Length: 590
Image (cartoon, rainbow, N blue to C red; front, side, top):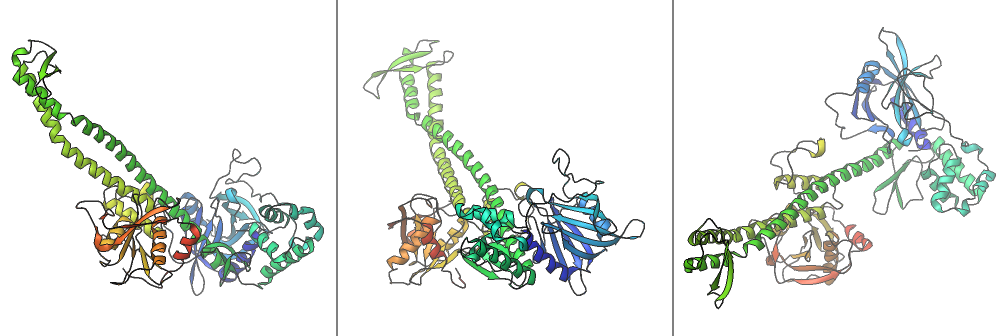
């Protein structure tokens, strides 16, 4: 959020919130506050964030953030000083990314005083500071802050209770209405790459960030100094006069990438918004959702990889035990020879060589226990042989189970790619059900409890082929089972990447009508993309009818066997897959 956006937001918040009463203050996490304000006709929740990367101020709508059971000390202080007070002003410190919220409230002895809650949105130096005010309403003494800045942390500016408030050092920038063509010419923009052009221009003009600079250079149409100056004036005046609606910048897939109080014409697409506050909230909802999704995915990936490491170790031990048990026949033969030739075994011997009548009487050296007789040594060999022989089928069962578990977990890793928050929750609950994850949230994460009997499988992703056929893609193992074994018809076409983890893909196919090759190819692209072979070329994808697919008894979710398959070879390049994924029906059922 640059200062130009903050300017528009400050004006918008002032118009709607000044005069509101403070009902409640919460602190959901270490660097964020939510102030609940009551106006004449509604209640609003204002977010004040000092996040290191996403510092911002905007109204909150929809889902409420979760709060700790015990409010932090700074939150308790704000409640004591500001609750029941009135918000009397919202102003920006010049063209800085600093917002001041002035509150009138009663102090400890009942006098009406003014406090300033200052939100500094300056990257890793972001902070929220409560101060007293001087007679002119300017910040005076620091009461407390959400982040304490000591001398060890900064020799330039300390932020501690009891110190006088010092504004952040001013930036040597020019006001937009003072920028001349000579200033632009000195930047030598033509000699710089595009990214440096935006940065250089934003360092010249007060209030301008790289996003506004990119829009200005786009509107200028060239790097001619006069054209750039004119574009600067146009964008700033559009914000100051409210001549353009706020907009949300979108990428090629329609995902929010930026918010601004003007039209973002330089991006692939943009969406006009009712207010800059709505645009900012929509953008940060998307960004914070990505952060949460990324964190949850990485935590699940960590858990799955831990189990895979244990299973690999267990598998290696089982293979060693299996190899060791293969000699049970040789142990039985030693017992048979000792039983047949006890008279040839010297008393107290540690070994003996006997003719092996199972191998044309070739001599065989047999280790002995000196304290045991020939028959006792024979019985010992028989017991060892019997034990190892009985162990073989058990070891084979255990190896099959380990292989099934590893195959299942490797499929989970594939499904974690690009998973949405709902899909991640489904994967988490699936791992709990299969015994790989405990019921408690990951690493102290708080989450809303889900109904006990609510299925977490969700619905497969649904796409439409160029020929109009419905293509379904399972996004977790339980969903794969449901799609393949329960909701599909015998003549539907089933696809899966060959010999590696991946999603089940199903083409809804009319009976006695062949599926077009183009649709098969598009479904194979999806099967390859949602698999471990995503970044490979010439990925083999098997396909067959659903009636040729079945589940082995007792196997983990997602594991099936199939027959009568054909194989396609595809390369899941991103543009081709994106084109298929862009074709989604308005609604789908499985």
